[in-house]
Length: 340
Image 1 (cartoon, rainbow, N blue to C red):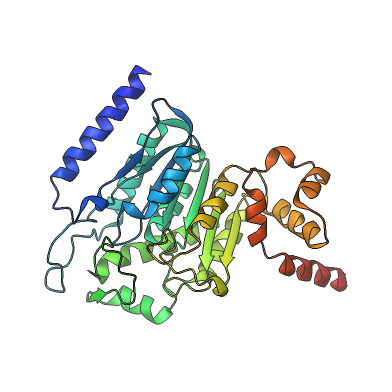
Image 2: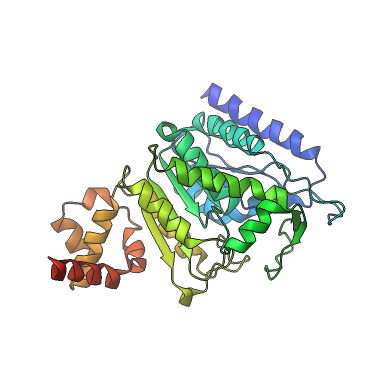
């Protein structure tokens, strides 16, 4: 306990000193830690999105903290700083992969001192970093959750420009929260994550991964959902406890999906689905079997009892099952039976 207390005090003081030395845009850009008075069974390590800040994971962090977890949401390198950023004076975002790789490895080491099982997650570029970390240190990570990870953009033309040009880009059409990060960036800063995305897709074909949950939205115009599904299906070949979910366009969930302020009115549903994944021990095949039997008219409790899965599902799993596309599961199975 004394060692844990010292670790927490040192972490808080060093982080505060480092961020006090930065021209932070505002207090919402600071790292956010939700820490218990003693080590916890599980620790969440969340990485915010590109040009954004830790505020994106405050609602989720608070929920996991109340559920008994320690939670870390560190400020990413070069992010959250105030200044007159423009094409002639771009925000100080890193343009080397190693800076981000060293950053996430450092925070994984810290997370492992605060509890036993480490869950990593991230939004967009933060999801890219979580995916890279999951493939780099699979034995040290309990679960990984990728919220709309940036593996490539939704347009191959945009990817071509990102790779080839060093121009300045300004965000368009993002919600005005008052605490959103930089309004623009130099393309080499984004190129880092485009390169990492390709590395991740290649490594997933060869290396093991921890259970991984990839979450996409049909309304997301920033990233390529096809790559999300490809990653999920590739990882599932070696790690059957990997899940994938694509939010319907009807829900209108944007790329910035973590908070109501950033445009997702289903914020609490997203958090519940995340907890269902973290606290269940189900393969995707088992999730689909539950969905199939529910589509046949059976209740969730009856199905998990039939399949002897009661001890493997979390209390949040019924809410998760409301989002599973049971119709597609039935159609796929009926098509399979017709083919054979």
